[in-house]
Length: 249
Image (cartoon, rainbow, N blue to C red; front, side):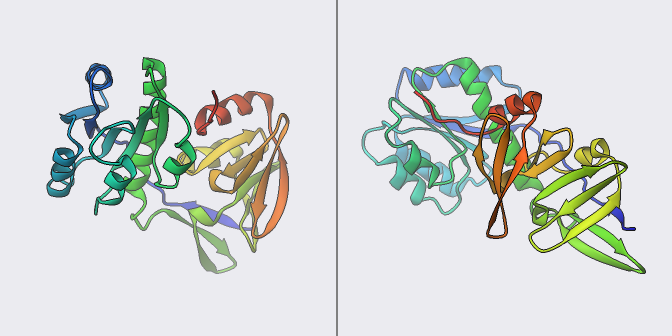
């Protein structure tokens, strides 16, 4: 039998410093929304992307950037690419034709105009999860130790592809190995970071990065280089869809 010891200590994120780079009236609307959000601290509002760039170059404590794709004077993708330090970016646009290109630049969210407050909040919630991940990603305790006999084997949390419940045990499945441990699903779910893992079924927790396809009653994931299908519970499906970035008209 394997015994697992979790040493993960997740830090609850504080307020994020943000700036707005947008023309009116979108900039004014975003300003109003930011002022309503207790998790955000507005550090500046710009209609000139060059002035915003100067601030980002000289002040690297900006955690979130609201960037209007339709700004004149400088291409927004060139703007992002010119930054040596890139904060989390929520992009706002009047159309969806550049959405796929935007996600190649690792933006957090892509919001269509006119920006609704509910949609703004969803994007901010997603940014908070990214921010939390950045705050903890370099901490060495983002790992577990699996006891095998008299030895302790270190396993990085990101190497866990999915967790499966088996009566009074659970299995931690990686690309190459499977570890069976005496643990409850509720207990292990509370220990795994929610920015990396999500529960999709009463018997399954999955690493979000391996999800390939979401269907009505199951999902397809990649284990190493092999596809695998896992069941998707009805009540968990709604939570999963809220967690992902869904492009729709």
